[in-house]
Length: 210
Image (cartoon, rainbow, N blue to C red; front, side):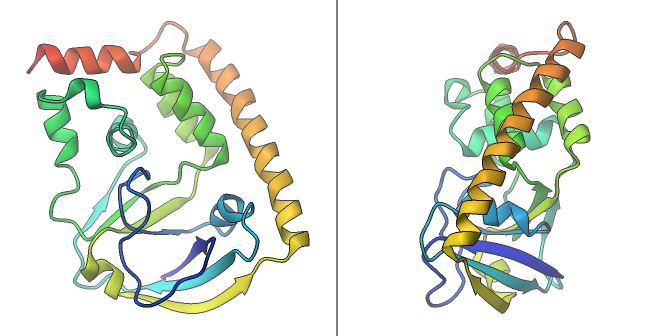
């Protein structure tokens, strides 16, 4: 399948699972179904490069995440938001969710979703509001190769260096996307003000079951 990867400095050598650790699904090689997603993430870097890549999935163990609370909790774990729940059954369950897989597939936490996720982690919206936001945003998917085996089946097809004009336009779009995320979060928070659980309540329930 054809996917997109953005790099601020370019790919040098073999493709490897060496992204920053505090990414959505931990260290890996991140690819997306939507071209604009990596573009808005790298547009602040002069000389940033957009890659078109091909992923061969044959023989890979793939974890397909639904657009639900499990997706959000896995992101919370990988972003270091669950440290207060260490030692609980919930923490162990989430920390082991990706074990044995080569590739993780889940919704992209794009510019608009960053705002919604932060509000969930900070106790402003509930899990019901978060899941409703996932449905409303219609996010693309990200494919993350988290093992050397998964990365070995990624092939670069083409690349494009962003021009200064590209970067200015994309930076404006990224700002607009975040503004849209705030607007959407405000609307959905009102609809689900009294429904669902807040992030700290989910963590406390996990502690009670430890």
